[in-house]
Image (cartoon, rainbow, N blue to C red; front, side):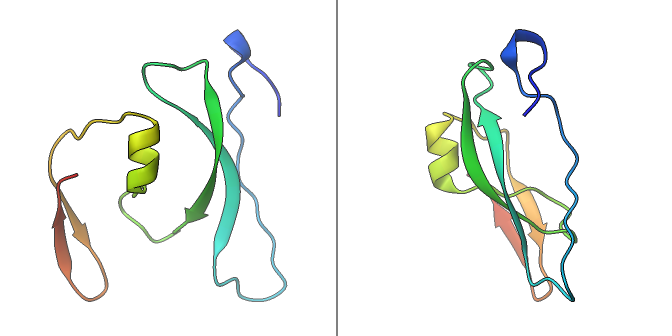
Length: 85
């Protein structure tokens, strides 16, 4: 991966080709905590091309020491859920 300023990986586009219909799109991404931008860690990502919001696991939240900025309403095909974590 190309390194930019301060050794931070340069942003890359995601292009995936599949023979037929893909049931899921996954890849490895690198993420840093907001308070430690020089310390990147690899994580697996599952891309939902129809999503209107980003969802991360509680394990990722804990490992990056992320803080909630407030509640969010998530719309799915079958229901509406309120999240506040």
